[in-house]
Image 1 (tube, one colour):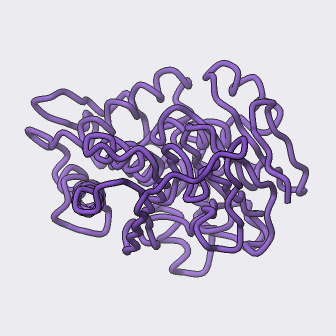
Image 2 (spheres, helix red, strand yellow):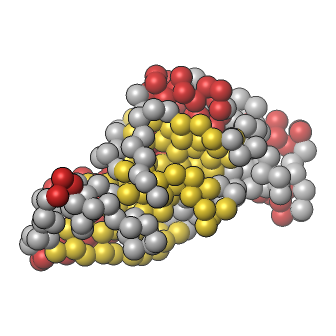
Image 3 (cartoon, helix red, strand yellow):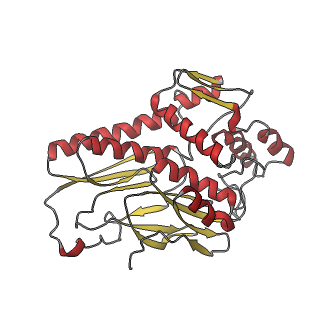
Length: 329
């Protein structure tokens, strides 16, 4: 559904788990793991519990929840709710998951001055069409696509979702994976699972790792997927990353899949930004807000939204707010 994974979890991928907290003996938990394909990448879930049968049911329910979300929000499935909305311009009685994501998206759009906008899909289509001809879109093509963008032109109510202008379309690639993290976390908690690491392309930790310590997560360098920017200790918040590299329209990464709705072009300042927030959906959406704002504004935005951020600009310079718990190498 979107970019390659930017966050690597400490789940047997070369990042050793942090040791037991304060010398405590690791809890006698049974641990299980699921890996499956979704959102165009490999998703994974590792969870621990005392009741093996209950744990298996929780994992089954979690995978099904993610598949339901993808089935509703995929741009590649012509039968998805989102595809029907884009094709027909309206969607009566939207499914609850889609309604929740659209409501959150419109709320973030309103409070970010439109920096996050799910109706940027016409811009992506314009750039992708030009890419098929091995070129970038002309200014007139970008302007025509930009005229069909605007979050205010999307009406969202429990009875229906509708575009108020012709030829509008939406993408939820900038928020769906974060929302999937939140839903899986809810499903696990409803089954009594208190310790897990959820990876739906964004990350959500629960409780402790198999060694009875905090989950340790690696943030990958946007220009070298084999190098880490930092190792962080999870503090219960969800982490989401957006980067320019995974879906670029130009070799210099100037034009990519993240768009500034106001200009119709990609913001020029950042290579990647990671946000830690109370929910995966919010973290996911805010990475785009910060991309649009640029590196000079990220610290102020993080304080305003009460989140933490770590970013890399186009020259490779890094910045971070103060709330990260960094792990030793």
